[in-house]
Length: 196
Ligand code: GLN
Image 1 (cartoon, helix red, strand yellow):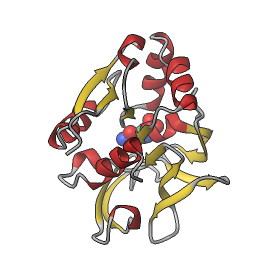
Image 2: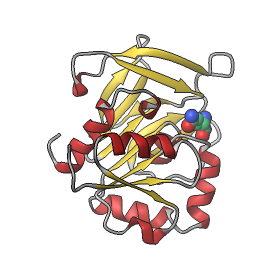
Image 3: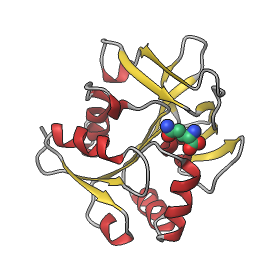
């Protein structure tokens, strides 16, 4: 697909390998990011799912928080999945963590509770095409509120918002890297190249 793109995947903790594999399937150069220097010359960055408390701590410990924040504010497109969504959110309810605060959304951590904490469902996501997207939720956060400038991309049947976009920021409460459907990643690449 887009041969010349270089996308970083934050590799402090969590499901980063699956994102790298998905990007490689799309013929994109995917590089794990653990140190600030590895952010240079990226066309985009993915923040994976995992444990947001741990990822946040490691981002602070390795001086990644301020640099990612500054680069994103300048123009770097960032895509967060699950814990990555939490780290993109400006407001977090239920055990907040220090975040990048790049998207004007309020996210509730562990919102689905422990009993129904993991589930799969087919979602309508018009931005990526007509065919429903099979979404895997694992101890997922949900988006409680979006402010002006944020587009809702997908919701559950009960109206719970589970994917959103604000400018070049993209976020999903589910794990698109855990299925074979690459359309959500392709959508992020279209944001990176300015096609979407
Ligand atoms: N509930 C986790 C957190 O708060 C996120 C879960 C995930 O990324 N799969 O960090």
